[in-house]
Amino acid sequence: MRTLMLTLCFSLLGAGALLATPEIGEPKEIDLAGVSLGQSTIEILTLARKKRRKLIGPGRRIIDQDSQVQVSVYRVDRGRSLAGRRVVKSQTFMFLNKKLIAVELKYTSKRAYQDYLRALEKQGYEKKKDGVYVGKLVTGDYKDRQVQVKTQTVTSGGRRRRKWYVVIACCYQVLGENVTEENILEAQNKTSTKKAKAAKDALKHMF
Image (tube, rainbow, N blue to C red; front, top):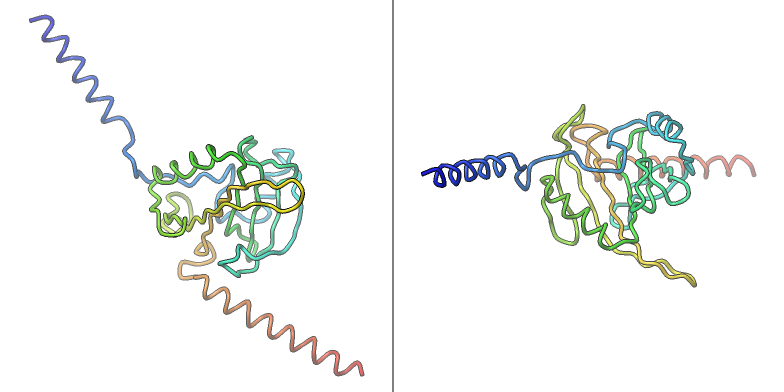
């Protein structure tokens, strides 16, 4: 009888432990090595100073080859991240309208990269085709805004060829609930056309 009761107690304890374990797919905030999408440029610069990390920038680039959105960028110097994680070999912040809309993380360890992708799925991100994951921000002012995470493997050129495992997390909706990539590209193209026309007109008046 005593043995039966002990067995029953352990069984109940085991069931309690299972219930306490977070189930796969439970929404959690995306891990971007110490920063959050939607933070301002000033917040990131201030955080870098507190962490005693040097940032290289500002520079200009497009987010990636698929997204031609032009952004202002800062990169953490010397292969570091603001969170100080050794597995992250490069961390780049991408800003538009002085808000952090994308973060690029680079890994050289395939295992660390795969661990990150598995964590994404556990955080509730759904895997789409071509290495794209889609989820939502779950806390803060931008809760429920959609996040797209693009993943790819890139081999650098030169004598020392190196394979990089790249993650780019992007949320255009920190700029506004209805903002899309198409909206931004349209606005940027109009601005570029106006600037080109103004420069052309200025040249006419010079001669």
